[in-house]
Length: 266
Ligand SMILES: [Mg+2]
Image (tube, rainbow, N blue to C red; front, side):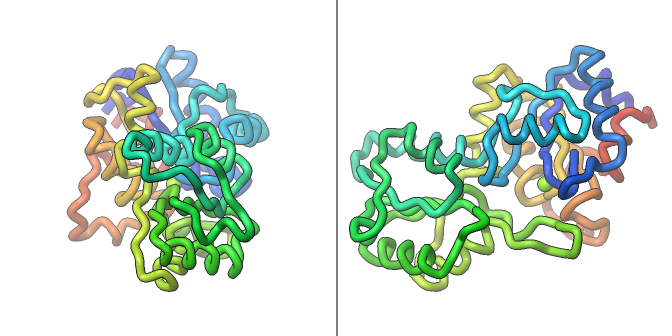
């Protein structure tokens, strides 16, 4: 398969695909540079809700990878899209947010009023995205607001991400704590839901087989890419191991050890 010449758009997940922690995976900088030289369109799509596009561009720069802010689609952007889609019902005016400043900023752009302190239990909506300061008080506040009738959105449903020493909790693990306390399930906005893919389409990425999504998660990347109509490549450099593929109903078009294999015709 000559990947470079078979696709017009390449949509890359970041964690477990382009880098792991602070290190580039395999020759990902060279892969991206080669695609750019050959005038292929590149996008980055991540469920991690803690960083903004400019933060990601800076991180990639540190790994020797060129990128532009406009090439990133994040789960806070997806969350804002989901909120906007529901605003016409006028059931939401106020929101309690447990998340990064970047998430607050994206949700704030929808026009919802963020509440805190004594106003939190009466919020119409609770939004949660993983952030380093997540704590018991946030679980409690969210659970009380949800018990009082607030709707409940999570930026993404990923349970963990791989770190240097093993599995580290992602937003899905934090949502589980609030779900257990409140007895109510969150709806999530990131991959595999449609919102990030709709944003990609608006930015010129065709929802066809000529677009290749490259991800390390079957449940979020591959499932989302397939729903969007893309071709999908699973890389085994992140959360999915070869043994996870057996009997899994989600089947990628291609399975690669890592992104370097995109440059090797096979
Ligand atoms: Mg990933």
